[in-house]
Length: 169
Image (cartoon, rainbow, N blue to C red):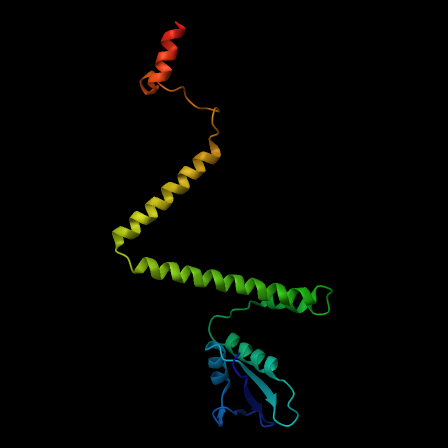
């Protein structure tokens, strides 16, 4: 497991990255998040963990720029969960839901990259084959043997069936 990178927050609100021995901005901390770096923001004097408050500050600033990710309605609903008996469950539910979304997004991107590496004809052929297979599965699920089946024409009867039929006459 990688060593946790320590960023100290001073009373003047400046952030100091101890790994690179330099002051950093909230944008630099956001980039650490994007890069998957393991870090902790600590109060320079008390060593209190301030990571959550810094991350919330980054989210607040990003929400004010451009297209917000969190709607007013969603934020209101989240606030209502504080103090509720389900508050503890909500956090883990949101984490799992987001992880499932990220896993599906990763899988979709892999499939898209696989498709883009093929010729258009190969892509069309593969899609057609998948659609035909799904159609066959749908038909098998909807049409049950013996229900709504048309009788087989005599021309498609097996030689054994034709012989049995001749003997019965």
